[in-house]
Amino acid sequence: MLLDELVTTADAVASTRSRLAKVDALADLLRRLDPDEIAPAVGFLVGKPRQGRVGVGWRGMSAAMGEPAAQPTLSVADLDELLDRLATTSGSGSAGERAAALRELTSRATEREQGFVSRALLGDMRTGALEGVLTDAIARAADRPGDVVRRAAMLSGDLGETARLALTGTAAELDDVGLVVGRPVLPMLAATAPTAADAIATTGEASVEYKLDGARIQVHRAGDDVRVFTRNLADITHRLPEVVEVVRRMPVRDVILDGETLSLDEDGAPRPFQETMSRFGAEAARETLLHPWFFDVLHVDGRDLLDEPLSTRMRELERIAGEHRIPGEVTDDPEVAERVSHDALAAGQEGVVVKAIGSPYAAGRRGSSWIKVKPVHTYDLVVLACEWGSGRREGWLSNLHLGALDPAGEFGEPGDYVMVGKTFKGLTDRLLKWQTEYFQQIEVRRTANTVWVAPTTVVEIAIDGVQRSTRYPGGIALRFARVKRYRDDKRPEDADTIQTLRALLRG
Image (spheres, rainbow, N blue to C red):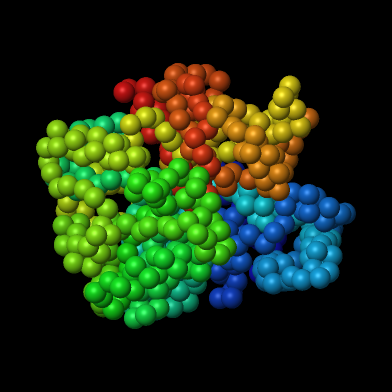
């Protein structure tokens, strides 16, 4: 298929607010793709090429853009092959080779195609063809049940491969997609509530568990082979040998565990989150140890537990993990839930997560079965742009433009980010230096005072609340926003929603 056909469909999807029209356009495109083109095309549409980030920034992309071609000749396969080449070219002279390969492809691209290639490589696709819409389109194109396609995508963690299987495989093959020990799955997500008592009112009887101030991990063991993954499904086994040894000692052969890891000080209290993340992100093991705690189990010795109630999974986890279970208590009493929350805070943790005792494990979904409670208003937002500072901060990117996720498209395209405020408070000199360098690497455009960036960076923001505002499209603005920390462990899709923030008005 010509890349021009993909670009035309992306433009059509971006030009309509109708979810049905988006699904129809995408389904028509998917039916016309060759089998080898399906996974790459899906990756391009959602701004997540199958090769991942290939090290091309705004400057490199701009330098590669020359006079566009008059007629479309590039194919989907041409762009996919370029990304393969960019991802594998390394060593002496590789920068020149990569630049030459990029210039050669863009010279064959029309003006529309050049823009599409740029957005795809910089992670700035704004077509509205988000994963939920595209998942429905895959089901439509393949004439498969939507819930079966969604489950396969969640359990494989690969929408492109799910599309290929749905469109070219049998119904039985799609139905058979399940947990595979060693292949990470999308983690279950939690909603938010202001207090543990409010959360219990929603869930009923629940396990009220400490919310650790650490980094989420998913651990797979098959015999003596143990693999550790981040919440973004990156394999970091080589970084965490201490976690590998803990899981190897467990009384089980095959297992998939969900949990967190963090570093402790000499008194057994959690170290600052930044210290945990510094160790977590190191490419080699360091002196500081990371201790794992687990709060769920998805598979044990050939038995999938996703659809079992939490109470069943907790019994298995107690048998397997023992002292490495996250502390908590089962209750339907709001006062008990509040006590556990206070105990967690006294222990130096973030708060609690309240989990309905009868709930299954909903991979990749955020619902009301899990509800996180923090003592202050902190939300995970996405950086949309950054302004150059003045005075002491002159020469540094300082004031952050913050966006909340709009999954339903209530204030724009489904899956876009709605600006809710700005802040420069809480930024240390170290963070200012880092973000000045980093945001220019993911820059998509700029004016004299502002650098707009790909919406891929999650930052935890503390606020005193929200207020009504006509300045921003979501109708609210943050009150006294300040930066707590950058969340390298979270995807932009995991950001808090505009609907969650607007609910504070009613609170």
